[in-house]
Figure 1 (cartoon, rainbow, N blue to C red):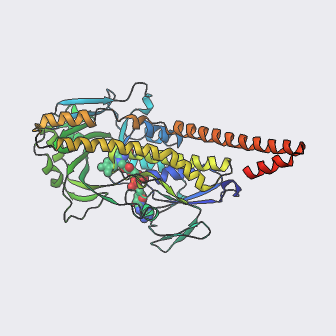
Figure 2: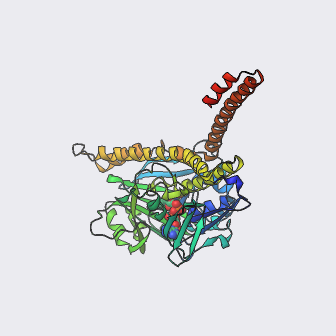
Figure 3: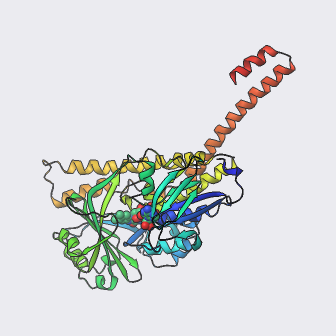
Length: 458
Ligand SMILES: Cc1cc2nc3c(=O)[nH]c(=O)nc-3n(C[C@H](O)[C@H](O)[C@H](O)COP(=O)(O)OP(=O)(O)OC[C@H]3O[C@@H](n4cnc5c(N)ncnc54)[C@H](O)[C@@H]3O)c2cc1C
């Protein structure tokens, strides 16, 4: 279907999921006069579990485009006074191994900030028409109709028929399982525990007087770490990463309440003030991390995948919300591009893929680098001490060499891509014009023989 043939608001779009990807998609698609989009969310309300979330420079840029940055700026968030966005410390001794600052030239308004996940979600929610968000709708069936449209069925008996389906339904995406049935995700062997405690209680812990304001990873061998960060408004976040076997354990990927001891027991060898912070936890949420290989592309037919549904990276990099908002921006801009040039939905989604897939390829390559470091460190002949292994891990994986993803300018990447496509289209039509002109000349010259040859070539 050619998008520009549609009467106003006739491109019907269903977005599955109201996380950062789905909300970002609804905000950006609502600016397209030829489209009408609706979110279907399985939860009874748009709510957010979990702890903190990093707002990276690329995320700020997207939030500004979506008109959500000001709301977030006027909500509670934390930014370190000296401008560091993370410190990497030795978990056993507490010593600073390395500190990361936003790269020179980052506008103050775009510097890294950390807030509660609900704060980000509220800022996005404020920009959407609530009538366009249908909660308590769990997508259960997707059927491709001979017309090219897609029929959707939900667990509450509701149905819909749309021209474009956007899967923004997270790491365990139902839409992805229909679009790419052979693709699998699996437990990574790594589990994250997360909780919030009172910042005032952290301030009372001996040895945390200064550290209560730092954004810190406290590292240990084997990729085990604890992350501590103030979130503003008297709230303090604890996120930890440990290795745990998956045998016989029911693993949910997003937030299961467990006793705080399940987290604390992993950090017996840690610096006493950090252990003091962990002991403040009353109950914690367990996130068994799942991941899958990179998809060959982020769309198929009239289905597009966005956010964690399109790149099951398991929360790596602390930038998943930023990636999700970038996806939302590119999907809507690609549809606009197609609309302005009389192209089809499929051509719009091909453009979306051309911009996003290479980016995800680079992100997966970073993960390959992490895996290579872990493999090297598993060598039994290495005999590294706790402190030596932490030094290697921080230098290899956390030195800032991969921070380019936080500064990636998706709008620039998109406009470069369409300039390139438009130039190729112009060259193609100039070539066609050339052929037509030669045909016309042949006719005028009465050279019918030439005309037959040109026609055969066409
Ligand atoms: C431990 C951890 C730490 C992280 N830290 C950060 C961080 O600091 N910064 C950052 O930017 N990112 C972070 N991330 C990643 C970030 O949370 C995700 O990348 C982000 O939430 C992805 O957004 P999404 O909208 O794609 O998916 P989600 O947020 O998972 O939203 C998907 C939505 O779809 C709904 N849904 C699912 N199935 C259906 C269905 N069948 N029908 C209807 N609705 C459905 C779900 O209920 C949910 O609301 C972290 C992740 C983890 C695991």
